[in-house]
Image (cartoon, rainbow, N blue to C red; front, top):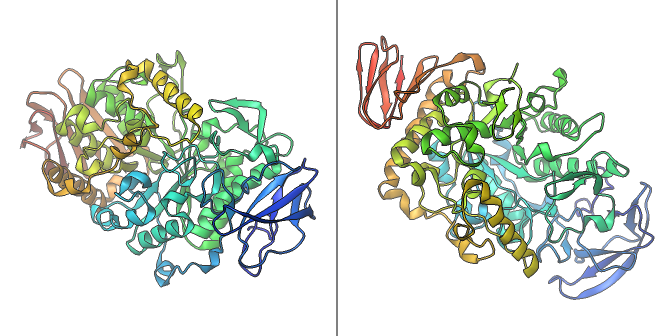
Length: 598
């Protein structure tokens, strides 16, 4: 609760229920037993001192913590600001006393994590461990600390429909998913991560809400027809009633920082946030995050996913930007993936040359005003005045793996030799590299799209829509697993017993060596984009990326190549295959990458 008014809380005494419902004529708080199955009473709510808000006439008894709201005699609905949904998206809400959790002295010693120079590791809680819970993920934190990453990034954990899903269709944004372990489970994961020197980044979705269990429109103008998105009506950030909707989002972001101690947020698809206000909601969120960081005395950061290649998102507030700390750079992935795999369908038709990959290695974005054949127009803008730490890059992530028909990983698509080349170019890039769970050992498990909607009609629409979505990539309906089938979820779970087996152990050793090199050489994370130089030969199939004392030479050809790399004063520090210096040239075996140092 940010101001003693918006949202219920138990800290500091017995709770009083409040809710924003500006058009309601009558609001009742509906109370339930602890199992959420039996209604135990109702209490009328009256108008409060803040316009549009209602409050219960009396404070609740200490043990009456399961509740819902009825608007104008309608069916009980979960609290829009529900802190816990133990019975799913359609059930009543439960209050949470955040002050009751014991964070311990280790949390006091945690100094936070700076995004610039960090290496991230993306996880999906449901498939990361056998248990598919926050506590299940605890068992693998030592592996991540030993790997050499700096922070884990969690796919969205806000309450979504059913027991399994990606999380990007959440509807109760303040409530960690019940099947993952709820509020205390997430806190235990954050606490244990910090104890091991790992930061925690959380994906949040403010551009839309999922269809199942989405009752916000029953309460107020959370959505508007003034704008539309791929998911329907847009979230109302700039129309009548938008002040409270904006506050809803700001309070949600600040809650993750304050009550769950996360270190950063990754904002999903910010290009789909429609806001014509003089002060964009992202700018307001950036200012609120800066203030929270000052109050906390530790760094906090925001990463924006955007497909616009627009530097305004990452420019500082002082430079009239929106103040995000970094942008996801999908084009780095596309350029690298197309070269490694040879795929040219869908958006990969804009990529595939070493020239474009070299550009991605220098500045992350590839299309900076050039004509895009896939889009049929000129696209993007140069990343002027941005630093290398302003981009998050990846060889794999949940989207780029999971949005394939069968969810194949990169090693399956191009083989382990070329996957090692991709890993070296990503991990030793000047940007913020992010690994996707299991990437470091070339996990055999795919990552597929899965849902668990209880409404059969909705489930059928999702299945059909998924199959139609892949037409541009040439994948037929029979190639796409049914998202509603529980086996689609089960086969996406990581097999942690692979780590000590070959070829997985060898790939894991490769990633550890790359991350250790990244840590050892400050030149890798030097912030200037202009500090990276590249050379390549399209016909011969080699690429050289140079940054300070570090030189990465990659031979993507299927034959041995002599690569000019300015070998005077260089030595081979790490190589995935045969690599021998001959004066100023490096002889590289087929599909081999070498890291050289001065």
